Image (cartoon, rainbow, N blue to C red):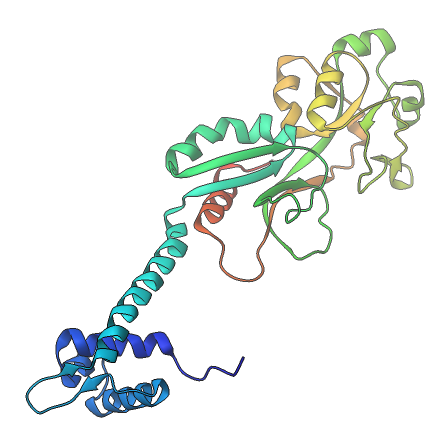
Length: 301
């Protein structure tokens, strides 16, 4: 295909204005052009088409048969362009489906209580929530936004930080009554530890000792695919679990879980981000609405 060095839709718009306003001068004023520029544009258009579109006279403007046919097609094409732009710009109204991938823990303790507010603010949005602790490929899974905890790998994704949460080792009073409370990290070797059944950025539980902070091997006998499952197992007395503080804060207050080895807690924080594919143009308003809402209301601490 040859290089296109003219603005065909712009030429059509000027031509339509000439016809609808009845002359070159009126069209020039409407298009903020000079009459000579409009005349040159029409001459260029007619030469390219190889036919005369307008019969010029001092008293009135008259379309040729070819000009009439071109006018009818041009008005339809311009209307289609307007409609295409309107549909694309309708994203500014924040409508359509948004697919969010997040963990069961974030959904249970942060997102779910806020969903009614979000849906009330954006009645045109349909929200699909997919729960998994595993890292997903946003493009492959057709996901608009994912909420991820822990270190972010270098990628083409854009991240908005939602906060950072302390981590704590907890167990149920029932478990501690049966098995005793660990007093030092080495006591963990005599306790059932609960872990994740997928690879994590840090394999082990960071704990202080005389040499600084070490990643204490978990060696979990019981593993689960998400933090919320580990929380429930810990409450049931299955063992010790190291979990995000925001997921167990209410359980600690209610006495369902008890922090252990706090003297050895290094105070590390696990960052939580909303990530999305942000390259290649502005975000649809439906996605931007969810990101802004999460950044403002779904603060993790």
